[in-house]
Length: 280
Length: 341
Image 1 (tube, rainbow over the protein chains, first blue to last red):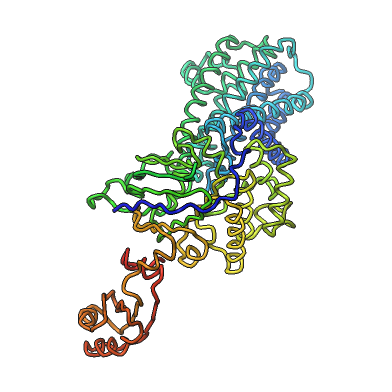
Image 2 (cartoon, rainbow over the protein chains, first blue to last red):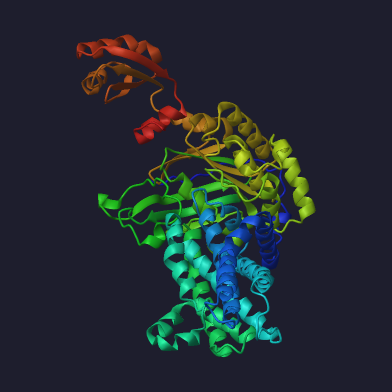
């Protein structure tokens, strides 16, 4: 049974709102979303720093200071370690900056609804998350750098002369991992997000060529080629190529090419899972 | 443009709940207790939450969607606010199609959700200022409006409070402020008074009357008869995804069957008594549902003695008697065979 409803209109005293007809530019909405994330990140800065810096700083102390001091590792080890530590900070921070808020945003009350109601195409909201997460990744790498240098002491072979590769690898690595965060945050059940860190992130850090150079795996070819699925490998190796080029490393073109590819895959896939959840 | 909302043959099917998909898709809020009917009663088939819904809401109208839990009200609001994709049919809101022109629809609507969903990382006023920013409103204007709205809604002193520090009623008012900050043409409210104490509910009614008086189009879902009756210009009664009736509360009341409803609660099954009651002169309709004997009559309470005699003749004792004059409630019972809540 279908009843069509229609009666006389009420007298409308409200003129159609002119403001509601003016289209809002996507850039303006993107900016507003970004300012929102910035505001939240600034407010949570202490937690953010602890969350993202604890792991790398502890590693710096043990492997970059204590072990060399004890003579268990040779002095040159810090040269191979520093780029890896930067890669780890960048990756951890970017992936968490997106995945953890996603869990809350799509949680019980769906806090993200107020943004999904914004007058823009919905994928823009996912894109903004990825960009904001990448910025947080870059910031934590910038913070870790001087701390590492301070604790490890002088690092032989460190150079900041190759600015372009350094910036490119940092930006690509951050985007790759924040896109990965988008995918993880929208594809994994909230209850399993803790498990995700044990199952995905922990092995990723250990087999990411962060604490040893990739070429060092020449003696264990199985692992050498298996680790190539790990995006962290390309960030760490790319960093080596950029700031400690004397350490044997993957060609810069290979590491940056792999990062472009991985960032694209994660972004595309993450956007799809995001949209699926958004139109829940 | 005269019509604020139009839907034609709107239909929404949800996949069968038994078909639990992979881990990934089990994320998110548990699916709303979705309602509806399975076509042909087939197990495992899709659930039809909305079936061939045609609605026309005029500009400036206060329109109510009335129905029990699971009737399809929230699905309707979801489709109209571009947040749920319809399976088929069309819907337009404020002159724009909800699928082809969803951005424009979002620009012109405000939404108050069933459960308050403020951005918990922001405080009360930031929730409003940022929401305004998502609509391209400059900060100065947004701040001024946010202050005005919070004052007007009686939570002015809470502007810097974290949202977790607000009570349920205060959060609901914050949601209303958020829905209004960009001055939408059409305001959607999904069960806005569920979980509010009576005082907060009355306060909200006043706010809604004000908004209506400004000429804003308001669409509200509710399963409270009184609320629908008090506030709405017109009501659509929905059950199991279908539109059963749509008219002004007065006209709907006039459609309520057989005048007064006399309901006797017996000490046992009322079916036999109901059969006997049908032969009482003046009874237009009688039905027995468990212990309830319901008889409709133009003669109101006069029939009570006769009904008691009939019940006692069937060996039942009458434990309670209720009289209900023709109302939306009695209409609803006669349309759907069940009470609203």
